[in-house]
Amino acid sequence: MKIRLHLIGHLAPSIEAPGRMVDQWVEGFQTNAGRIDEKWQKKVGNEGHYQTRMVGAILKQYPKFVNPEFVSRSGLNAQAILLKHAEHLQHSFEKYKANLTRAYETVDGVKAKRFKEAVEANRAHYAEKMAKTTLPFTGTRAEGLGVAPVVAYWLTDDTIAPGILTPAYELIAGGPLLITKESRRGSFKSAINQRLIQAGAQIVKSLYKAIRIKEENDETNEVVQGFVDPALNLFPFETGGKSHIDYIYHDEKGFSLEVKVTQK
Image 1 (cartoon, rainbow, N blue to C red):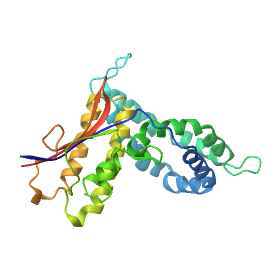
Image 2: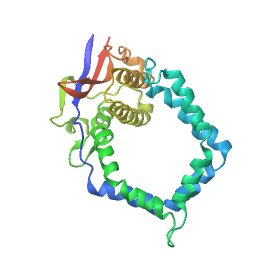
Image 3: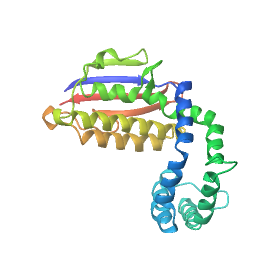
Image 4: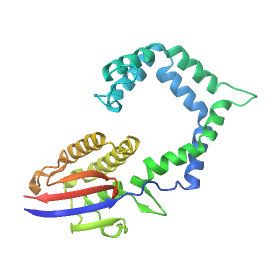
């Protein structure tokens, strides 16, 4: 048994969003307001599409955010809450459509004036959201690369890998290595980068709940295992296993990502 890589990246609770990034977000939505209006009209502009494309998608994800053991003050269990939420959504199309129509209508000669004003009003909220749920994982020019691209580079043995570690990382053993076949290098790099950003954001939004951390780690390791080159004879990637990519949270030590690759 040989440890080919053992790397830990410590995550900051938040990284301030660069002003230009926030400006671009605001400008992008305001400039494309007309196109966004056309897009929602085409995608969910009638009740049939609303039910299948909007309500169906929401209800599929909703159970992930409700603890199965939860019981509300009024005595509703998780299943009852889901059914109540579903009933509300299924009868909300007219209100949904009216709100969007109002947001995108022309006011004082300005197309989608209310929508544009709402985007501007959410500038600070967007900056805060990016600071907590995205930038700690992607990184910035000022702070360096985040854990998602760092891991993607290290597990594809990219030539830039050795030079991108900051003091926030602990290299305990090993070095960069390609864990997938050469023909899948690009697709794996993209997949693990996106997966770690998504998983990290979901964990932060859950306020670091243990059950959510395990669920996200399980999914991440499943994705990684699907790319592993069998010829390397690695221990399977699984949460807490000899090979794993796990987000870890400790009240005192904070939030981190541990990568361990072990060969049989």
